[in-house]
Image 1: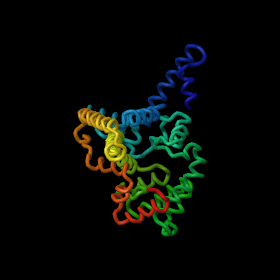
Image 2: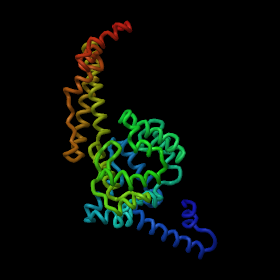
Image 3: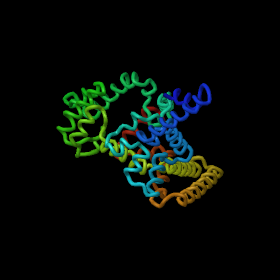
Image 4: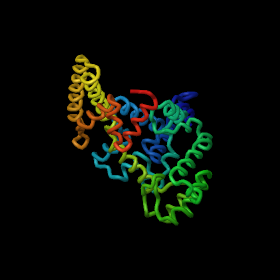
Length: 335
């Protein structure tokens, strides 16, 4: 599809044929926008992914283009339905059926595999490593992983749960199972971790689920849940850096005074503490008040001391098991 769009846009043949190709390209893009929204257009999902990764790794901020777009549309007065239509298409907004991911061309070919590869080398992208192999990877690794997760959560009781056996079934069987048995019998929809999504699924929504289309109420509830976590962790990357810098400075200060008798290290640690405090003040001046960061100095100082003093760490991490941990040093012959 991407190759066809490229040929239409760049044009082949005479001037009339090139003009016709560009008109067809414009019509396809317009239809994509109407049915799958702005983020269904070619490459927009990948653009959102790049923006999110740059913001998270460069500035320690957890947000994305979808959040920015939703906030802009809300500020200009677009209602929830119109915002949904612009971002995810008219079918999802007015038809109450989640089809945007199926109609979308937001991911260029190979981008899902690239994200999975990046995840596999230790950089969190939200993609699972098995996605590198596409559908075969989901079957070979995804299903065993899901079965193992259910066994870990439920133990032996998992074998009496129909969901355990459905995890190994093809998607069309899972959809029929959910629409005809699971959701009507339970009367609610929940996430894998047990968070309630909805208790009000109507007959036509169950019918749509049976043919493979998740009801919009469920997909929106999942999206809201995801964005709730994103709001709570929006500046977590920055605050973790601050915590790490403060803790390391207090560790070095403790070492310089109590272990190494190093005045230069003590002065350097105090200077780093002052610099971090200045950065925190600057940070608080640039974010909204709910996100202001006030470091727990006493806790961070105590954790820094634990990093430098093994006996103190063993005592603070669990007083009841202190003697048992002390025996480890004797067993290993370490003072």
